[in-house]
Each structure stands twice: as C-alpha cells, then as structure tokens.
Length: 202
Ligand SMILES: [Zn+2]
Image: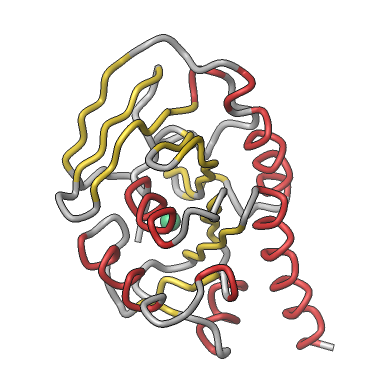
C-alpha cells in the first residue's frame, strides 16, 4: 500500500510558506526518523509524515510527497486550518498540499485535546512486531479512507488514547501510528517499541 494519493475532499488554498517557528520542532524529529529509515522513499513513493497541533482544530503537517527529501523547509509544510472527519473534509494552506494521511492525523487529534503530536512511520520490522504482539490494530482497511477513520475511532472507543498512544495499520503495509502530548513524547514511545523489538530478539 502506498501513500501517494489524496483520497478525501480538501480545500487547498495556496498561500505563502509557513514560518520556520511553525515547523522547526517537527523538522528536528523528522531528521532523526529519516536517518533511521522510518520516513523516506521506496520505489519512488514517499512515506511517513509528522504533525504538531497548533490549536483545537488546527495542526501543521509535512506536505504530500516529501518523503524523498533529506531536509524540509517552509515550502514543504502545510497548515491544516480545519478538518471534519465526518464530512471527510479538510482545509489547508501553505505552499504545498498536506500529506495524504492528514485526515487520519486529524481523527487522532479529535480523540483528545491533550494530544499534541502524531507520527506516522513505515517499517516492516515494527509493523510485523506490532501485528504479532498485543498492540492496538486497525482492521484491514485502506489508509486515508473513511474506513480508516472509523477504525481509529473504534479502537480508542473505550480507552484513554494517551494511555496507549500507538497502533498498527493492518491494511497499510508497514504503517504504524504513534502520538503523544508532544512530539518528543511521541518519538520516545516509538523508540520504546523499537527497544522492545530488540529485547524480544535477544
Ligand atoms: Zn503510510
């Protein structure tokens, strides 16, 4: 499954690039995950995306098809100004369209006002480990689909999302979602999973 196609209805208003202060923290996390191959490019298609909440209904996210770029600048980040999972709608501005998984990020932000960051990585190893383990998982549904939104809402319907802020996307090969109160917390949770993989192998 690839991340290349935007499937929802979106209202993209091309505007001036974002300010550096709006994405500098995302960029720091992104460069580490890119170095580890958790964000990047495979067969010409970029994968992985990161977002950071701005306020209740707004967040900054990496732009579409930026996975192949080593460093991102103001032209590569998108501001989501509004999103509505039920109407499958989002409105964005900036110099680039948002990642095709922006609405999944928005669905996660909707779970709790305390969620401040969402990280989506691709890794066969992490994906397989989580699928085989006792992690939360979506059913086999496509990324960026209405079904994915329903699945995210379903798996967190009776638990506090921040008590278990990670899940594996069964129908989206290699796809894993992690979130947290802030970016560093989300990154730490990802590295805890990686640590568990290493422990499990020894
Ligand atoms: Zn993906």
